[in-house]
Image (tube, rainbow, N blue to C red; front, side, top):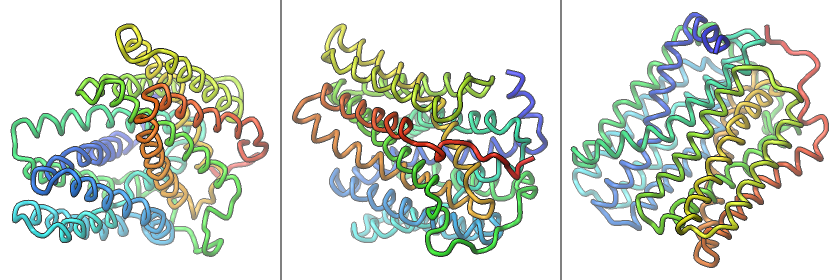
Amino acid sequence: MRRYRDLLATPGVPRLTFAVLLSRVTTSMLNLVLLVAATRAYGYAEAGLVLLAFAASNAVVGPARGRLADRREPRLVMLRLLAGHLAAYLGLLACLLLAAPVALLFLAAALLGVTVPPAGPVVRGAWPNLVPGSRLSTAYAFDAALNNATFVSGPMIAGGLLLVLPAAAAVAITGALKVTGDALVALAPALRRAEPAGPARSGLFGPLADGRIRLLLVMIACDTFAFGCLEVTAVAAASGRGSAGVFTSLLALGGVVSGIAYGARSWPGGPRAQLLVLHSGAALALAGGALTPPAGAGFVGVGAAFLAAGLLTGPVETVQQVLVGEVSAAGQRIEAFAWVFAVMWAGFGVGTTVAGRLAELGGTTATLLAGAGGQLAIASVAALAGAGLRRPATSPRR
């Protein structure tokens, strides 16, 4: 763990870590508290559309926010968006408390998504300028492990709030913590050492003009498609009961453990070989889980498949982040990571949609096989890709 001690000894990194952790955990809390609050006030169908309005606007506008942060001072961009984000939260709360027409709630949720400060892309884009190149993979592994941990802790915290408070109050607390976390990221002294805003370059397509970035985004979309399939699999395996959380927790736990282990030492092989092995192994694990029906010992078998998939894919996010950070131009790095977040949302949404239909037709066998297919697709791309998954010969990082 010496690498992590050295990373956290870097001036400003502990404070930045706390800030981005607070920002991310409240993002995972929001999905649950907003869903419950909107359901109680308007019904299931309307609540689903509220979440769709938030997620779609967040994903669509995300790359534009990243480009703006690249071309201007990231701190100022985040603070200006944060002002709009706070106003959108207040509007959302007003709609929930006053039982406003549902169209106004949709509008408030969409504005909330549009104004999300790009805390994640800004921090990921800044790592190459905050730590030496020798610690970069450790920094990204630490970042990925924190991200996975929020998917476990966020819903748990949100669930606790909903047990003791009205749903609207839980939304208010979540919003206050989110605004605080994003403000702490924007004001973190460590970001002042980041490189200056890059010039406007490469025209309309930005980092998408680079074929290597497009290749990585395709792989990331396939990866989150598979995770979307697993989200539906968890619910189907538990027959819609609360025990679905056991499966998703096993997946996240495996990701945290293996992600931390990956960043603690150097591993043989380049990114291409590592991705090929990890995704092939995950495809085999999920296909094996598909052989057992979710009852009795089969229930344990599905859980084992989830844990194995987490242990195998935990390092993947680290490898992806390192590659995106290294192949993207310095003045386009935040936008590149914003595209990563956007395609993750898109891939996950397609995965849950496809798996939802498959669950009705073939149960967990079909959904696990679909998830395995997503992992196998990435392994195939890794096997066929050449220079797109090789690190640059030279790097501007220190």
